[in-house]
Length: 173
Image (spheres, rainbow, N blue to C red):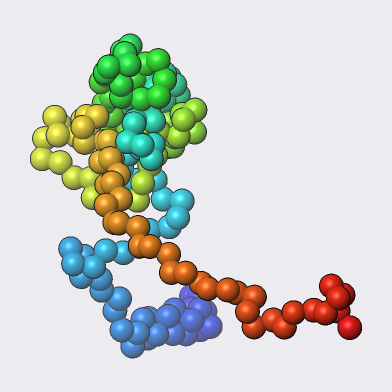
C-alpha cells in the first residue's frame, strides 16, 4: 500500500484555501468592457485619408493574402468627377466573411496603403450567416468631421524685448 505524498496534499489544499478567501473578479460585461491587449486583432475596418477619400485602391492584395479566402474585392475604375480614392481604381465591392475569417492579420500586412486594419472590437455575434458577411458600407470608417471651430485671433504679445535694457555701443559690457 502506497502512502500519499503529504507535501503535495498540503500544496493542493493551500491553493484551494487561497482561492476560497480571494474575492472574485467579476466584470459587469455589457456596461463595463474589459480592455484588450494592444496586439489584439478584432473586427476589420477600412480607413480613410484625412481628406475623406478611401485608402483602399482596390488592388486585391488582401484577398490574395487571406489563407481562408474570406475577402472579396471587386475593383472598378474611377474618374475625376466620381472620385473615391486617390488611385486610379477603388474597391467597388469589398466584403469580408467573418465566418471564414481566422483573424490572422495577413490582410493588414499585405495592404500597401494601410486601408484594412483589425481593430479592437470583439463583439462579433450574429443570428444568421448572411449578417456575418460584412460589406464595404459597414467596414468603412465614417469620414472625419470637418473642423468647424473658428480660429481665435492671436493676442498681440506686445514688445517682447521691452524688459531687456538696451546695450550701449552694440557690445555688452
